[in-house]
Length: 318
Length: 264
Image (cartoon, rainbow over all chains, first blue to last red; front, top):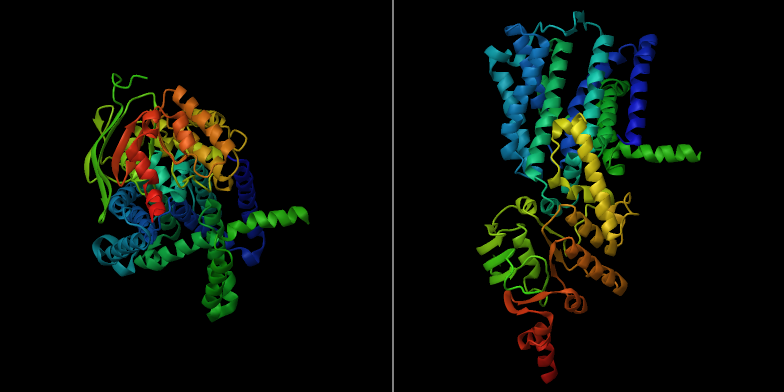
């Protein structure tokens, strides 16, 4: 692994260890642990989206559907068939990967807006499925009483234990993704961006890798969905609609889609802004949120992550 | 070299390619025997780059056959043809501009490596060994073209001459049997062109057959074993450099217009 990534990983780990210590001792931000669990769940999805958008050069407006497939598979198997949550999670990943493959093979032949439309359409179909298959999904009102997770008999029923589980998975997924990026597969994907014709001439199986990354990103989203289900204990279709898909893409773009660290940064910032910090503006929060998005896209089109080297330069000079 | 008795390596028969109403290749036929440098020359718009693009599978021909070692490859995808041992450079350089010089050549090793997503994600032992081999091989090819001191630079920041060398290194990294060079001397100065001639000879010594499209006549006459001349999508002459120099059709194709103007 490259030294810059190693440093960033070290910084992230340090932050993740210190965060609960601070949050649990300052009562005003005591509930931040809960927010961070959601940040972690969205980070899992967005690392996949970052691989797909920033590295494979494809867009998806349907990732809420993969998130939902993981969530509903876990929820249904655990409540209706009393399956072990971990097995259900694996089943969810398998089902989601299969669906992503079936959707991905034809739709990844499309480019740009058309691919966005195809994935958007897929997301809408899955959302309708969650709404209408009442006997299976509980319909618009959803269903509850989904059991929590436990590891080796140790029940993860408080926020701290769930925080540790979610963020451990985030870090492992991050390492896995960084390894893929800095390998022949990552190089093949990046080469497509710069010159498709030269990549073809070098024998890179363009379409195969696009599908592969699409499926991988769907699997990340599915794991996130299962974690969400067992944390919230309740499912309804409104948590997996088109707006979530758009919000996820927005997080990746704001953070910087050509860098997987950007996905983490964007997810963290927009989740905290939306769920916490902008509440001081009361009814105007959505306006401020929009203004921030606009400012980032206008003045930092490569995303917030590109501020990091600039800030560290100023820091070293100052 | 006696080309008559050697086995044919690349054979093109009656190749045709049209873009709308423009017939870029009008039934072209020629052979390349192994172990030679073959140049393809001709005025702008003669169809030389189109020929390369059809051979390497960037677009399929409308008609005709291309055989590589007796195997028909016309209409195959570019990536399949690359795996059969055909590599190339581009007239308008197509380096991966936002990747480093070393990474560019490492992409060239793609078809010679096979680690999948699981083994790369988990950095399994086999993948790490393979990655080390990819890196060593890429370094070797960079040293071969003389770019070993540029490894960490972004390819897009190199001057044109070095980008062209980088493309050669990247193409060589695929372990090709035949290398197609599209105007390798275009934009190079005299000294760089001399270096290029020496490099092409060294490539030939590696047992790689070289086919090049080139406008620099000094270079072509100097290094080629055989020359094919194209005009308006057709072959108008083929032979050794000496024969080509004195061919009346070739002289007409190159100088015909100017003669006409002087008559007016």
